[in-house]
Length: 430
Ligand code: UD1
Image (cartoon, rainbow, N blue to C red; front, side, top):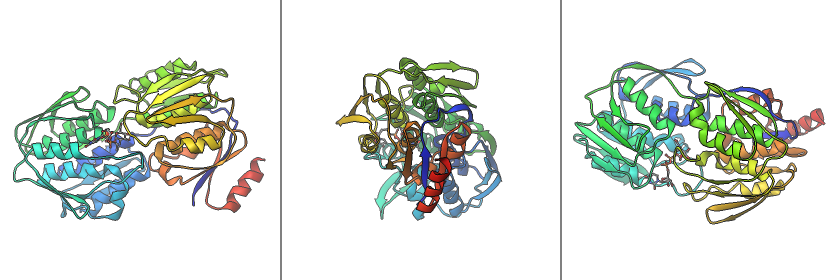
């Protein structure tokens, strides 16, 4: 029963190093099995989802050597299985990337249907539509996607919804198909571009990633590469909100400021100071911050993965804010928990109406999903008194050393696994 326990009230102040992007890394790790040569991947975040993906590719026969905490060498020449049959792979949504990777390389894949965060219905029809357009036969059998192709042949694919996962998955399979694939209405997220750059570094011919039309000219095979993953936009955004919500002063280091523009723009709108450097962004919270409205959208719009952290921030501003969630239908589950801390938020359909309050009070709250969990930690750090956040396994799926990084910024937070430890913490910090 690991929990975070914290005593709120300290402004978060200082510098924090941002880890590699989890969502880029998941695609890149899957893609790394598409060559028989060595692939070395650096700036890998040490978080649970990544470790599950590494175990999954090891399980089907790839060799994975950890060179250090953030660097792995993968050699997939020893893969003996195209069937990913493991309970834990269902725990990470991104296991679906193994369909595109295996199908591209071996023309055959069997991968359990994904699980992951509980933020609403998450179909993968667009992924499957793309694979079928490349000539694969797809069935759903015994809870798994079973894909086979005699040959994959490039095609013209129009995505009905802008999907990060479908864009990456189709791009991987098409990169080893015959001829040209044109993928329209593609997602433009930084991690789509990062996976495309990684594939290109292995010899793929992908143009246009980062725009809504991606052109992929298939090649026969890939070679080995060394690649460093981009910084995590959402981890950076979470700490930026941490500065705003605790009225602190945080510099997020090792970031690409352009990827953070939607977040920076909203923090500026509510009255924070935001100073961009070459590879850092400093956010200074202000005692009086005011309301704004947000709609989550595909990149370059405001990211849905920052919606809960921004809601916590807005809940402590003056005035009434509105957040429209347009990507996932079930992403306001943290609202009841925040209400227990004194937040004043009403949800109507896909819109949250947030009436700012002067402060939160500590409570025991439960993490409904990864980003909401991080948001509740931010709320606890701004609250009066003690907050206990349960189910922190969700948070550890995506944030490396979250408590340690927060502590370095002055937070009073600890991971505990028993009531006895929690009481010890309470006594120690008073
Ligand atoms: C990825 C991210 C996730 C982020 C999301 C949106 C990873 C591992 N996860 O998730 O953190 O919240 O992008 O930025 O990178 N959809 C369909 N059919 C499909 C695929 C998607 O209808 O075949 C819909 C989804 O229900 C959702 C929208 O498209 O409403 C966007 O989903 P998508 O971009 O695919 O999200 P993921 O790739 O699952």
